[in-house]
Structures are given as C-alpha cells and as structure tokens.
Amino acid sequence: MPSPQIILAADVTTNRQHTNVAEVEQRLGSLELILGISAVRKTVLIIVLAIIWQVYASYLDNPLLFPTLSDTLTTLYDRFVDGTLPSRIWTTLQVLITGYVAGTLLAAILTILAINTRIGTDFLETMTAMFNPLPAISLLPLALIWFGLGASSLVFVLIHSVLWAVALNTHAGFLGVSRTLRMVGGNYGLTGLSYVMRILVPAAFPSILTGLKIGWAFAWRTLIAAELVFGVSSGQGGLGWFIFENRNLLDIPAVFAGLLTVIIIGLIVENLVFQTIERHTIQKWGMKE
Amino acid sequence: MLQAIQQKIDPTAGLPDVKAASEARSLLTVDQVTLRYKTPNLLITATEDVSFSVERSDRFVLLGPSGCGKSTLLKAVGGYMAPVSGSIHINGRPVKKPGADRMMVFQEFDQLLPWKTVLENVMFPLIVARKLPRREAEARAREYIDKVKLTRATDSYPHTLSGGMKQRVAIARGMAMQPDILLMDEPFAALDALTRRQMQDELLQLWEDTRFTVIFVTHSIAEAIKISNRILLLSPHPGRVKAEVINVDRARQDDGSAAALERDIHNLLFSESGHRE
Ligand SMILES: Nc1ncnc2c1ncn2[C@@H]1O[C@H](COP(=O)(O)OP(=O)(O)OP(=O)(O)O)[C@@H](O)[C@H]1O
Ligand SMILES: [Mg+2]
Image (cartoon, rainbow over all chains, first blue to last red; front, side, top):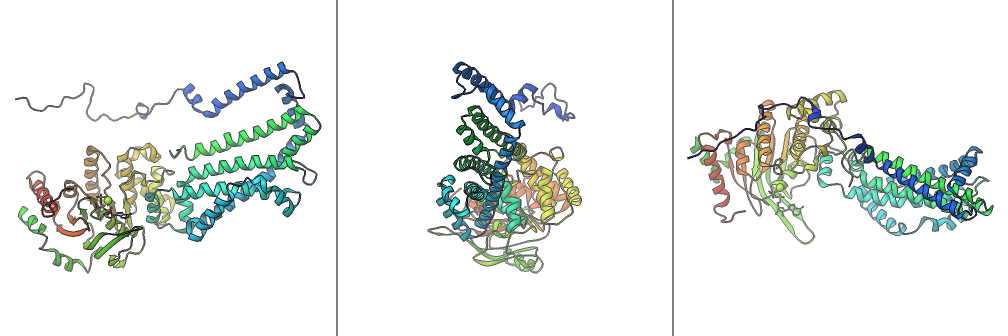
C-alpha cells in the first residue's frame, strides 16, 4: 500500500532566506510611476483643452465675445507685471484665509463639544440641519446691514460657508470611528481632548479632509460671487471685482484673464495642496475609501 | 495523571476551596459577577454569577460555546462595562474604567492605528500611558517587535501587513506595556489554521521568555488545551461557570492525554444541554 509522501519542489534549498528585499518587493517602471500620478494625467488633459480653446477662438475671430487663449495669456501677463492682479489676488486670499481658518476653528470647537457632551451633539445636529442647506451667499445682504460694506461682511459669509460643511463631515467621521479603535484609545487611558486629538482626529481624517475640501470649494465660490456683487472694500477690490470692473470696461480679455486666475488658484489648491496632504496622510496610511 | 485532571473537571468538586485559597493574594478576582446588556426593548443577561480568580503568570482560558458571554466578561475585566452585581478587583483595587494595566488584544484586524507604523504603534502606548521617554520607548518597542519576529516590518504601515502580522503587532504592543494582565479576545480566530498554529507556538515561546499573565478567550477546545494552564468552562444563555480545569499544561500530545482531555471537555460542554453549537 502506498503511504503519504512529500515531494519537495526542485529549487527548494531548505528555508532559503530572502537576503535581498528587492526579490520580494519590485519597483514599478518609471512610465507606470509617472502615469500613476493623477496630477500628470490631469496636466495632459488641460493642455489638450487649451489647444482646443485657441483653435476655436481664432476661428471665431471676435475678441469681444470670445478672446483667444494667447490674447488672454498676454493680458494675464501684463496685468501681473503691472501689479494689478497680484494685489487683487492678495486682497481675495487675505479675506479667504481669514474666513476659512475662522470657520474651521469654529467647526473644530463645535465638533469637540458635540463628541463630548449630549447638548453639544443636539446643538450641532440642529444647526447643521438648519444652515447646511442655506447657500452662504444668501446671507450677504443681511451681513452687509450688520457689518457694513467691507471685509468683515465677507468673512462672516465665508465662515458660514465653511463651518457647516467641515463640522458635518468631521462629526460624521468621529461617529464612524470603529468601536475597536475607540476601545484601544480607552485602553491607553486617553480621555477628553487628548483622546479626540490622538485617536478620533486621525481615525476620522478621511472625512475631515473631505469636509475641508468641500468647505474650501464653497468658500472660494462664495467669495468670488460676493465680490462680484459689491467687491470694493476700502478702495481695494479683489478678484471678483476685477472681473466685474473689466466687464464694464468691455475689456473682455481681462475678464477672461480674471476667470483664468480664479480657475488656476482653485486648481492649485484642490490639486496641489489637498492632494499633497492626502498623499502624505490617508493614502500613506491606506485609509482612502 | 489523566485521572487527576478528570477529577478536577467534575463540576461539583474542587471549585469552592480553589476560590477560598486564592482570594487573598490573587492578581485578579472576579466575584459573582452578573453582566447585562440593555437594548431598547429588552434586557439581555450575558453572564450570571460568574466567579474566578487569576494568579500571576497564569495562562487562563475562558472557554465556551458562542454567545456564552466570554467577550462580555473580558470587556468587564477590561473596564469597558460595569457589572450589574458582583465585583472585579485587580491587585485589590476595584476595576472602574479601562486602563493600561490591562492591555487588550482584540480579534479584529483594525485594532492597530493605521496612521502609525508598526514601531510607532508599539511605542505609542508606552509614551502616552507609561510616560516613557521616546528613546526608552523605542528601545523597548524594538525589543518586542523582534520577539514577535517582525523586525523586517518595523517601519511598515499596518495596511501593508497580513492578518497574522497585524495580530503579532497587537500582541507585541500589549506585551511591551508589561501590563498586569494581557487580555486576549480570540486573537487568532480570524487566522488560517497554519498561521494560527504558528501563533500559538510563538505565544507559548513568549510566555516562556517573560512569564506574563494572560486571559485568553477562545471557543476552540484544542486551542484552549494547547495554550492554557487553567480553563474556565462556561455554559451558554446566560453564561455560568460550568467547571474549572486545572493543570492543563500537564496534558501531553504524545501520550494521548491531551486528546482525552479534549474529549472530556467536549462531552461536558455539550452533554446535558443536549444541543451542539
Ligand atoms: N452590544 C450588545 N448588545 C446586546 N446584547 C449583546 C451585545 N453584545 C453581546 N450581547 C449578547 O450577550 C451575550 C454574550 O455575548 P458575547 O459577545 O459575550 O459572547 P461570546 O461568548 O464572546 O461569543 P462568541 O464566541 O461568539 O464571540 C449574547 O447572547 C449576545 O447576544
Ligand atoms: Mg466573543
């Protein structure tokens, strides 16, 4: 009767160690690496769109309706060099950053209260339910009455646009942290603020980042729109005002240059700032949904 | 010797004096503990009137069919749940809340902090709970990572590890804290049979090295016999103590005594109630 038998594979030298890590972990090819970066793929796409713009506008040949890309870029360059655009951008960014940071801080305070107390939870849930559906820009007329024609009205509206999106996502993220991780945090004796900062915030970071991104998008759009409505504060308007002003002067290439600037800044923040943060956090940690 | 083990299994014999003798100096005493869950429309009694004590360097196993309240008991010892009646004392102090004197190793693979590398995961509780300076924490973390044979993965993030590697990190993290008791809730249950055996061997090897105290939950009789020196058998719905098996470490594979003990425990768990789970 045949008995069980173990036949070794031909090249097995007993318990061979992988002395060289490269045998197990191989690097990807460089083309694969470059195309793996989504920023690269998106840049290629933008270049294609730019070519289509240039060709179509030259064919149309009507700078009052639709200037060519080269006209727009020339104007953009001129306005940059003569200092108008940089100062407009600076005005806009100052207001934006003030509002964004203030809104985020308020959101942080609200969610920390909400996660630690029941009244805080009720408050946050009621407020987000009420204010989240309300477009921030609709508060502008009221803000103008309360704070007058100036940066503080804009900051108020911006806070409103950032606060609820960030708070809602952060709170949802905190609630979604797995019971195991929360028990681990308790096991380490972490309570209160240190528990929130060391366990909940990193564990909920994907949601928090989503909230920050949505908040940024809301704030950016709201601000440009608000500037288009009244714009000038203490004689120095922002980007939205720049667009509006040049439309009145029928300087359409400058309008396009303004719009292009808005897009470029939006792209830089969304695709560079946030994606860099994402790459160094949730992607590295394997937490991206 | 087999005879002696069987004697001790007998549910009516031995238990009271074991308890009385150990009460004064036990590391952990669980005294007539009843644990209940409150759900919106009913009250579920998970365990009722459970008493046991754990001595230093015990490898104490809670064994019983699914739903008999093993995890619940462990959570109560961990301080995540307060008993409805009875008391739990560790080193003579009542257990009120979770703490780093009782480190938990969970069954779930997501118990590691995904934003920290293996090294940082092991270091983190040493720094926040033991208040060790960074360098000391790192040295100790590296020592225990070596012990669980993960030196090569020291700087990896958890999501790049296999299930068994993650559990080994969790064990290293628990042991590096040198807690009074290590609480392990079916830490190997989600592993394949091969890895599981390997991990059991490694755990025993680690115990030989440092003689830590551990409460280990499982519903595998074979695993219980392999790992423990004492087993507490629980009956289901609600969980009550059915028997305590002592000197389990004297059962041996080669003379068939382990297999016999396994059969006895199985019969005891499933005989009278008449149902298998
Ligand atoms: N969060 C909960 N809410 C309500 N009842 C629960 C909860 N967790 C457990 N139970 C109940 O308590 C009893 C004991 O559950 P427990 O998880 O302790 O069992 P166990 O012995 O660990 O089982 P297993 O071996 O399947 O893990 C079960 O009847 C279960 O239905
Ligand atoms: Mg369980």
